[in-house]
Image 1 (tube, rainbow, N blue to C red):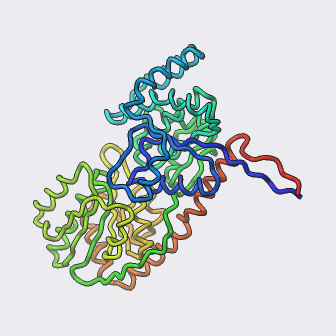
Image 2 (cartoon, rainbow, N blue to C red):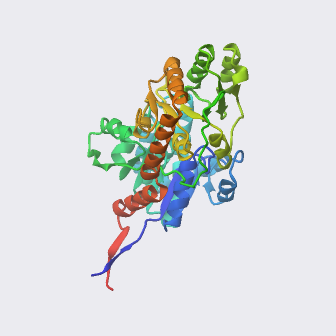
Image 3 (cartoon, rainbow, N blue to C red):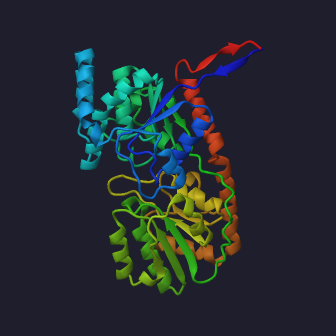
Amino acid sequence: MGERSVNPPRTAYVLLWFPKPSETFIFREVVNLRAMGMPLEVFALYDELTEDMSDEMREASGDVERIGLKGLKRAVSDWFYWLKRDRKATLHILREALFRRWKGLEKSGESLWAVLCAATLARRFVPMGIAHIHAPWASGPATAAWVASRLTGIPFSFTARAWDIYPPDAALQDKLRDAAFVRSETRRNIDYLKGMCTWDAGKIHLTYNGVPLTEFEEAPVHMRPPYKLLALGRFVGKKGYDYLLRACKLLGDSGLDVHLTLAGAGPREKRLKDLSNRLGISERVSFPGFVQYDRISSLFRDADVFVMPSVIDSSGDRDGIPTVIMEALLHRVPVIATNVSGISEVIQDGSTGLLIPEKDASAIASAVKRMVEDRNRALLTAELGKERVLEQFNPEKNHRRVFDLYVELVPGSINSRNPR
């Protein structure tokens, strides 16, 4: 018998930014795949981010090829290069990619920039010997990967998460059709994407994110007044933090002494602070701002209950499975979350936490009361949730699954058996 020799494909990851402080799950995937022996190069369509970086991210930031605004002139030149090589085919690709009704100003700008950058990516991929292109988001990065793939013939794949497919952009069906395979971070997304398929939907594979399974110090969860609530994330509509603030108002009016730490930053920060003032609860809400990843453990260790009040925004945007839910459970903090997107794949009501309807401040308040009134039961849900995270979101296992997908599905990645 001989041993099978595995030859992982030289792979290009295409992102808007890398590393990005709020995308620790993608950063960890890149780090782990490289550690497993994947020859992986990262390309960013935008310029470098410098704020709120952990030391590890800051160190990795230099190992990225960026296009950014300085690459505009080159991108135009690279499209002329492809036109000279095959004018008819390149014009067809350009027409298919550009003349679409992209939804919204931001997504339109991102998509058009992705198309422009694709010519430069394609010219870089060929001499580098890139055998596969992957986009960790189904939006602009996948558009760039799709166009670069069509220019070069190099196969591509992408990962579908949440806001990048809800609502779908104007090219999502074409990207699904042409991708060698598609990864989804939730089971719910798979059913959603299959509804768009008029081809083999078997190309869609579930690959849960991997979260760092560092041996975190467990939170004591004292459950003594004032009960300490924690929420953590970007201040955007889909997080539903306005409903959480209204729940705090209801809890205070009912006589329950709570204090909420609402950590994060984003475009709705002023709106949320104004709402807490109008509700008369500003003394019971703290806004510590953005907290770097390597400093969030202290927040979890000081919490009695973690609340994730996600909603489906009016635009259709929503969360996938927020990583902070898993991080809370790894600190043994009881979790209350809404039944949105893939959250129920982690939080099972009454077992690994409390699952409640979205956009319902009364439901949040009732769930908080249930948690704080029965500390033993709350801790049991947190312990069961921790077990689920350790099993289902193990980075070594999940990133090995990703590695194996590339090896199995990219042509030429597995060599024949070698004789002993």
